[in-house]
Length: 226
Image (cartoon, rainbow, N blue to C red; front, side):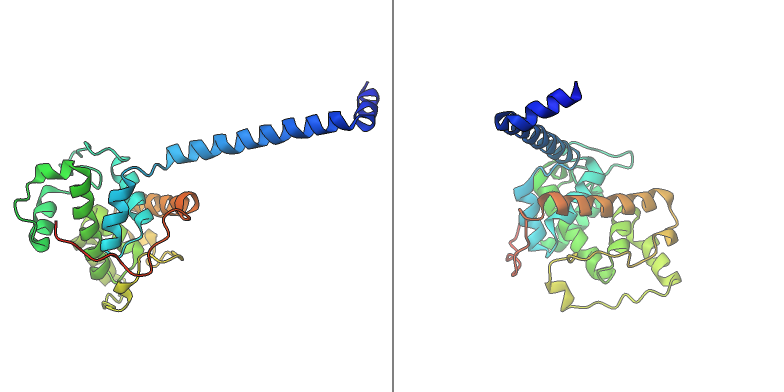
């Protein structure tokens, strides 16, 4: 029976073409199915706001997206058990402090439910952590989750050089090559270790999925007052 089928295929080019067409269609459908699933697993909502405020703070928008995915799963109404609010899970006190530093008059923590305000505050704070921890992505990410004080202690215990580099701060961060620039095993809080791993993993997937769509500008956008 198989020999008969093989002979028919060999003697009829149209059958070959039909089979090739079907196979191609199946492969295309499978690829698009996987593509769709991956985009659902790694959404990029509020893209305009993320790109705008990330570039104002010299951050890679896809790193910000990775933070948001791990913080709130892109839910602007999210509130944590500790009271962190919105997309980037900003604590009210942190929001007030950042707003004061930015000169954001009339700020109220309820504004953190607004995606644009939340991202504006959160990205400014990430940029501040970048400066404080000398652009070491593991420490910056851990500090966003666990707080600056604890992470600074871990850095000091490991004799990490946190001397700021003003020239490097002018470049979009993190750069194209991301490494474990501080041993994740030295993060003393299990939740924070998992958080850092999750953000770095998400950053890699976001760059694979959206990197060609969000190539950072060579010159950062000029910052504007809120």
